[in-house]
Structure formats: C-alpha cells, structure tokens
Amino acid sequence: MASASATATLLKPSSVPTQHKPVITASVSPPLPPPRRHNLLRRDVLSISAASTLLLTQSLPFLAPSPASAAEDEEYVKDTSAVISKVRTTLSMERTDPNVADAVAELREASNSWVAKYRKEKALLGKASFRDIYSALNAVSGHYVSFGPTAPIPAKRKARILEEMETAEKALSRGR
Image (cartoon, rainbow, N blue to C red; front, side, top):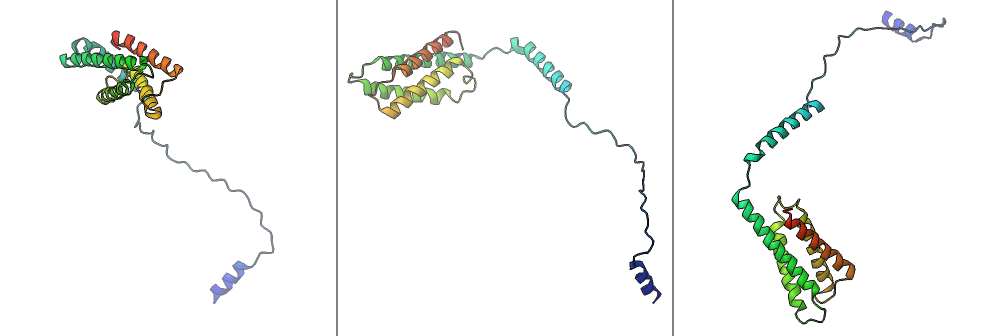
C-alpha cells in the first residue's frame, strides 16, 4: 500500500516551483581512425596515364601495320572512290533521262553495300573520308526514298553533297 501512496505523491504537482539549471555534459571520445583510401588520387591517375603513354609511344615503331590491314585500306579506298564516282554520275544526270531510275537504283544498292561493309569497322569510324561519304550517301538515299528516283535534288542539297564528296576525296588521298 505504501507504493500506491508513493505513486500518488509523485503525480501531485509540487507547491514549490523548481528552477531548471542547464546541465552541460562533456564526453571525451576516442579519435576517429583516418578514412580508408579506396579511390585513386588525381596524381595517381596522372602518373599511371603518363607511364602508359610513355610505354605506348616507345613501342609504336615495333607495331607495323599488318599486310592484311594495308590491303583492307586499299580496298576501302577503291570502294569509296567507286561510290563517289557513282554518286557524281547519278547527280549529273538530267531529270528527263530515261536511265535515271536505273542509275538511282544502282546507286542505292552500291551505297547500301558500302555502308553495310564499312559501318561496322571501328578503325574507319574516325576517318574524315568515312564521315563525309556516309553523310553524303545518307542525304542522297534519304532524298530518293522520300521523293522518288526521278525527283531532282534541290540545288543547296546537291551542292552540299558534292562538297562532301570533294572533301572525302581529299581525305582519301591523304590517307584519312
């Protein structure tokens, strides 16, 4: 029963107001261990890249292109030159020429086979000649697909296509 009265007295508000004093506690914790380095610092990355570049440049004279890649380059130049001449021949034909539809069909077949053959070659994707020829073939094929084989190519588009052909020929002659 004493516990019941003790509980009752705890619940009664006291008649004397109590002042609350702020309590400041200080705890001393052990110092944290230094963080682990899981990632590389910039100087590490730079030193690794510098070393690999040095090794690569020192070994380049020993890495001569294989005869197969030289033959592939010759084949690329020959095929690209043939496609360029076919595009120029087709674009120079008159609209009233009865052979224009056949020439456009041949051009589309040649351009499709050229793109299918060389688009997957990673070594050619960065070449200026590939980029320009691909762009020109895309413009020519897109025009004939949209407007038909007898529709004339507008003057601005034709000029841009011929300009891309010229820059591609220059790049081919320079091995680019």
